[in-house]
Length: 258
Length: 322
Image (cartoon, rainbow over all chains, first blue to last red; front, side, top):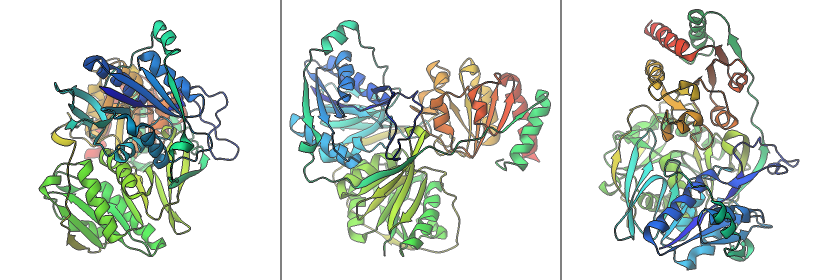
């Protein structure tokens, strides 16, 4: 089975976000970049699926600056076989442009399955998965937390979170795209031999500009800013019985939320 | 002149409150682009779709077909692309729900329209939609400007207040073909609770690592029942196995936007604070007076949650009964 995993390198979730001087993005100096958390589930699932259906291969694809190769190496160290790095130098990208570039990079590879995270840990947009599926004209199931491969290895029963704890169960024929939610699996740590081996695995370099065609961004993000600071409010003092009464009163009369 | 098309969401045959919120917001936006609000309801056996007219919609397109009784990405994408091609709205709005997040990007790619996801504010600038949305799970905010003739956005529930204006709408039945359906939904497994999803909940009671066990969450369930709230959890509680993944609030969990958020035994890691900071009112109950959660809370109680929470449940029960 031939499997692609689309991943993005994003700031670690511990990062305190600072805005750059032109308000056109975030300050990246000193920021630790990691594989986007949901993409880690995608990498794990891709490798697991390969192991179950061997022989096969997993190709990790990432668009980003030169440092994004580190994210690809992480996937290779976990067990992916090859990488494709798409250099986005000079590219003005919204979800539409990103999805077009990714789709064009992999469209001739005839993947059976494409895995990605349900959303990126930076822009939280959840756009690229559905858009890549559309551009490749394949079915999608997004926000998946359970996959049962069919015995024919050409289909799967997958479960997606539908809100309120409800789950929807889908029958899916390959080729298809699956976006991964937390709960699907526990991503493995790269072993030391894995990390050594990753250094010699092939990573192909492509340029986004060559894959873009006539596509132009349809939206642009401007005016990056921090949210208004929340101020600390009242800490209620006294015996539990008494503060609880006071809180209930405040919620009803001052905050008017109950 | 540009019309605003709103994609209705429904559950158990009824149109959801989030759609009313969108129609109210749509009415304001329509005034700025000299258009009107239209709604499309897609499904099977939806009750009284015309009622949404009371919130200011002028036209309701109803696409009633057994083929789309259950949500299907391919089917809804095709029906909406066809309807948009025919009725030519300038702005198409939906909900940032499990459906909207799956559907709108596919639709945007199909029709070549710009999309802003999970918006918390919408306006019009220079005759086009201007969307405001959080990024980094709420640690930063951006505005999204559009380069496309048609502008798409999904909005986070509870971002706007629904307001009835008492109008009536023309209901138009549309027979649109759903096309070939791939990835077909076979069944829905209901969640354990019938409470609103965290992302749509107007009240949330959340527990952290200090809950110490899954069993102890029952005191939060009791408080939530009294308030009509949904129960959430911090990542620490989820990773310790006290709560399920779909209860997690914060970065790598759900970003929530309730009127009331009660954090019990949650210290307030940066990822958690990012995910609940837009809550209108935050209450923190924690033993540690130095916990970061107190710097964001409107009301704080320094104390043992196992003592405070049951007392609060009793007190609220009493005053809500009055």
